[in-house]
Amino acid sequence: MKEVFELASTGIYSLGYLIKYAERKGLKTKTGKHLGKSHLYNVLTSPTYYGQFYQDGILYQGNYEPIIDKTLWDMIQKALKNRSKPKVNSWDTDWNGLAYCGVCGCAITISNKVKHFKRTDRTVTYSYAHCTHRRGDCVQPPIPVKAFGQMVLEAVSKITIDKEAWTLGVQLLKEKHKHETNTNLNQLKNYETEYHTYQAKLNKLVDMRANEELTKDEFMVQKNDVLKEIAGVEARINDTKLSARSWLELTEEYLNNAFNAKDIMQDGTAEEKRKLILSVGENLILKDKTMQFSFKQPYDVLLLPKYRTNVLGD
Image (cartoon, rainbow, N blue to C red):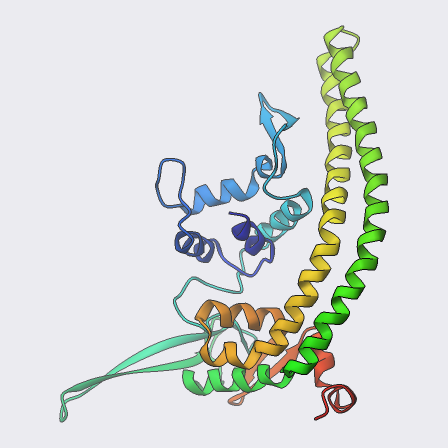
């Protein structure tokens, strides 16, 4: 389920796509039914999954291991707020929603046209990438999906590194990880001290309420303030615990993507291709039957002539 939360936090995927992804992973409701849009929306917006819950209109801190942290939950809420314009839809194709029209700015979509040849009694399906025309007529000409895919393949293949560069990068990564771990341990101790301070404050408020030193309204206001502080500290603790691992995973993903980019684009699954493209690229623009493709940082550094000459030996 955590993977669904992580996908939702990007703001790229629609609820329909997330439901299909959940189905492929075998996720169902407690009653064994498939997830619906309303059910999934309720799951994504529930504080229960980051460790808090409502009872009688009051938000309480749960005594259980949360699935996600508050930072990720906040990202999901922001993404859902802007979900009226999803960048990826749930149609079954590799390329839908990845690129935009360079003429009018609408999304590029894939359409199939079926043609029957009477003389040979055969039916052929042609697939085209074209502008959705949602802003009116557009002069952008359609192109065959095969040509569209080839342009994306050629663009992504520009960041490929060889095995020697990949091996060196992994070795340097491990050395850097040792230093980051020591720094994070010291930071973690400070946050945990802060957490225990707020937890003691919360316990004191409960005692004061039990002894009727606070009214219900006073207790709720002060308790919610403390819970917000606790949630903030917990988020910082989780971020610190994950930061060393996160940058390690991100850098490892960076090296692996660069090393495997061409193979994934040629032989990977639709999901692997989409994930790679969204990880390394941005501003995919189709104009005049050509693809304009920008690489995200730090993948763009692999395009620098100085880097490719001095490091990769091209």
